[in-house]
Amino acid sequence: MPEVELHHDGHPRYRRMVRFDWSETPLHWVPNDPFATHMMNVLHLLLPEGERHFIKAVLEASSLVDDPELEAAIKPFIQQESWHAWAHQVVLDHLAEQGIDTKPYTSRLRKTLSVSLGDPPKLFPPAMKRWWLYRRLADVAALEHYTAMLGQWVLQNRGLDYAGTDPMMLDLLRWHGAEEVEHRSLVFDVYQHVCGNYFIRAFSMLMTTPLFIGWWIAGAKYLMAHDPTIDQKWRWRDWLRAAREYKLPGPWQLLVTQPARYMRPHHHPGPEAITEMAVEYIKQSPAAQAARERAQLQGKASVQ
Amino acid sequence: MKRPMEGAMKVSVDLDTCDGNGVCMSLCHEVFDVREDGLHLLQEQPRSELRGPLKAAEVSCPTQAIVVED
Image (tube, rainbow over all chains, first blue to last red; front, side, top):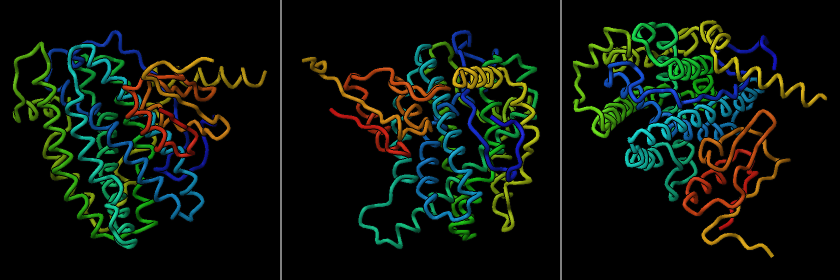
């Protein structure tokens, strides 16, 4: 596995087979802050369901890509995304063990996403089917803008460290965030390459923002209502408080600033995050280090 | 002749075609595990409750290496 290699900034190079042990992670892994814990637990619900559709859309678009460099980055992108989806799925099992069954929420989410990000209606003529793929890709690019922004946020903010957050969970969030930063331009570049229409892209962000944030808040409310250990309601003021403590990105940033940046006609994900910060984190991430050691051992074993 | 268990499914993977992308693992980690040395099938005759995720893994595999039989 080469550590340094020339590649397009914002495109992934390879997947890291990172594994986590959740046996020591408490239910409220941001100590004494069930609100911040559950706000971020929603990511375990949203990301696996979403990332599967990201993979499908990008795979479908890959046959239309005729730039070899871009095409070569699609495989590691798919591998990274499926590994992310798996890693978060395992956390859901851990939540279920702690008494929070998330299936009713995820099955509702799955149904919605299979309509909006799934295959086109069968009766669509071919031109409409092509448009449907462009629209799905644009939705995925919009969501990847959010994941990269969240990745950069979790890499550079220290509020969760000061709060004494469970190190295993923080490592999961930062490893995932780092890989999202690393591959932040891929879907955008695929979209620009196969379609590139500004209006589809901008409209897609306008539609995606309220849905994404709406499902996020609904997920946090769901988790808080189903957490047997607390009797606390979801409140906007708790979000503002957690944002002030740098435990979460603020609602203004998510609902206004970020979509507005993305909707600039000349927007590109490149300058939105810092690849070096991501690479630097992955170098010292305990889970990524362990994955590297396993890969090296395996490399040696296969030579022998 | 060994018959499949009642209510069990049969999963087979063409390891020559498998690219180790791990999409199956993200959909059904009870059955599929991608490790450094490639894909491992954790169960060859999983119970039929896993039908949904198994079928999803079958159709989502980028290299179509998975066959799931009822």
